[in-house]
Image 1: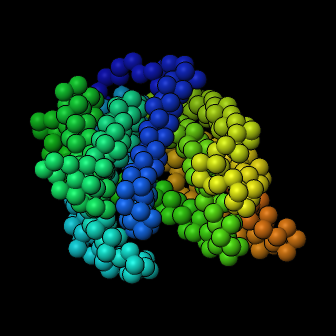
Image 2: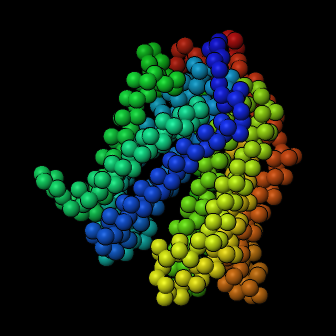
Amino acid sequence: MPAAKSPNPLIDGSIAWQLLLFVLPTLGSSVLQSAGGSIDSAWVGNLLGESALAATTNGNLIMFMLTSFVFGFGMAATILVGQAMGAGNLTRARYIVGTAVGSFLPIVLVVAVAGYFTAPHLLSLLGTSTDIMALAKDYLQLTFVAMPALLIQTMLMMTLRGAGDATTPLWFMILAVALSAALNPVFILGLGPIPAFGIAGSALALATANYISLFSMLGYIYLRRLPLRLSGAELRWLRPDTQLLREIVSKGFPIGLQMIVVTAAALTVMRIINAEGVDATAAYGATQQIWTYVQMPAMALGGAVSAMAAQNIGAGKLERVRLITIVGVAYNFLLTGGLVLLLWFMHPWAIKLFLSDSSQATELAGHIIAVATWGFIAFGVSQVLFGTVRAAGEVIWPLIILGVALYPMRLGFIVWLRPSLGMDAIWWSFPAAFMATMIMALIYYRWGGWRAKAASGAANNVHVSAPANPTQDLSVAIGER
């Protein structure tokens, strides 16, 4: 039977206050992660030169693709853990964590080993220049060494957020970023008995920092006896339950695929921009660096709303889910809207961080920001709405909506209006796609079938408990309630 419920601020407390407390650490983690990547790139560029920095791009692209799928499966586990925690079913929440980690860890290890030995072939498939092939191989191989720690830690952080704990992931993200930033020059240049690894030292610093952070986080989880820890006989739950694993995969794959869809669309638009010349590419590159931070509040809000809504769905408090969505949208206007307004006035100084004053690209970057940045407000509304419907278990419609908005609508917008607007058709296509996504998301949120899935999820999590025997099918547990 489910464990007795204990007071849970996410399902009983002030929605506005609890969502804010959840969003801020999540946002902090996102900012730190991006800043950490920027710092590592700065070390490589300044210590080893532009060729070395270019060589890291390939490894980072492969890692991003893999992390996209981890994000999908991690979000699926987050939703299921959140629903179980909301229902007061801690045993089921731990069982979900066991299946998620137990199934994912061996896959990650196999991919890491295979990736290490096939790195040269992967780089050839990416069309890596022969000038930087040797540097890229050294970096990519050590990046695969770092991958198990990086991805497993990502998975654990997401499940902790699903349980309502956004602070623990923040502290260990701080540890990982700080260690990586400090170790980069040590491993790149060598210090004392530590030899100089060159470009491989940057990936080695990433690996060392994340393994230390991962094991430190595991130690913290057990020392503080956090709710999701597995102990004693529960460690057998690391043997995956096939039915639960199918549920995680069926939800996680479409979410991960969304990241791939977004990336593929971005690469397509990048090819169009490259055809406009170096100034357009440089201006867009600088704008992208700035937009990375503009979109962070929306992404954090989407994740926070999803975790909080999942817990309330598990608790059967569907009216609170509606209010969580409303508060999330309001916070988006405050946070994302505030950043957009700030950037409107501050963009000349922001652009100077990436482009020189005399560059023709500087003027174009300012124009791009003025034309397109406001669209991120609509992007944030979509993220909140998607967070709610995903919490109910609906993952297919967000994928369809994104696919329609990014391909026939955005690319069609460019093709259709380019004869009349010229290059501006590219920049206007961004807010046009964001607005189309928001409108379709609002339509689905209002009239879609996600509420029926939410009601079903609430009923299931109240009654389903983890089997005492880890090989026991969850359907048997349902029958024994």
